[in-house]
Image (spheres, rainbow, N blue to C red):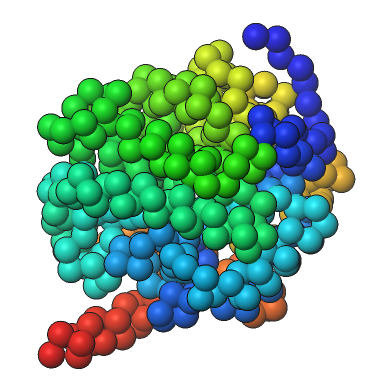
Length: 414
Ligand SMILES: Cc1cc2nc3c(=O)[nH]c(=O)nc-3n(C[C@H](O)[C@H](O)[C@H](O)COP(=O)(O)O)c2cc1C
């Protein structure tokens, strides 16, 4: 395969014909800016207008849930029907300002739905977390029936069609980070003995069916993407070799962009946790894997995780291993960083580890996520980010929401 050097400001034409205006993509960050009953709020439009004006060619939304019985976090947005169409249109209009591509990320958490939100989550198989700390927060799931699996495939397609109707310019399936699509792919979490489990061919059936159903519902001229794990980094889990075979198949089916990440709640490698020093220095956590994928497929790729400097981004693009550069945490602290990068300025992101000094708290991935969620809330209220905000303070705020939910569920059960 020949390699041509591209620059960050160069447009990218996707297989469906849509053009992304430059090579910078805001990767999904769950905003938790829905209402308590998972409706769309005006804060989302405010936040996405800022990001659209910030210069990225592509904005992928935080995960939007396809089934209100299966939430990943409190205040997720759920998209099952037209009840929020007006607010969705306002969100889409804001996020597509300046010719920006705005893709809605669609997700079902499977077993990664906390027990305060799902007393009995569903998953390919009835296998709970092996990590005792996680077992405190997540109930053991029950296995989906064949009819339920078909229903979930249809739900992905329904949500995608609604996103298109609202004015979003593409969709992305969340196939990474240990959520349902990833659970189907993993031989550790999927031990079904029917056509949905066993061989890799069977384990990838769910993601292929979801893709086909979405494509049939949105048409051939609409970008359909997936965020996929390079690997789960768990013994007996989804491996790099299997992941490459899935990439190849999805490319053949017509996927427009494959975003590469990795890890699960049990092994949060998407955030660089436990990544070798050499990987972190290279900025992009999953570039080595992308280099191998590039040899096999011509489908556009977006590598996400770890980019912090203009030079790091330029080097990754020049390597030819990736077509787009995915950024998440840097854009929560500096929504207009892409403009600086596109102007060729040497920028360094302010992203740094968030610590409280209390080891068990610092070891929880939830701490960092809650800190960034607080930043997104500020942006959604039109305020400036607060890089010096206290890690513990943001965690306590999020736990306050959790406690409130627990009390509410207790009252509903009573
Ligand atoms: C607050 C927060 C929420 C996130 N939510 C999502 C999500 O909804 N979907 C997803 O695919 N990734 C999600 N991620 C992961 C990011 O998209 C990205 O893969 C990860 O942060 C590594 O990229 P970075 O080093 O540029 O931050 C989230 C990350 C953070 C910090």
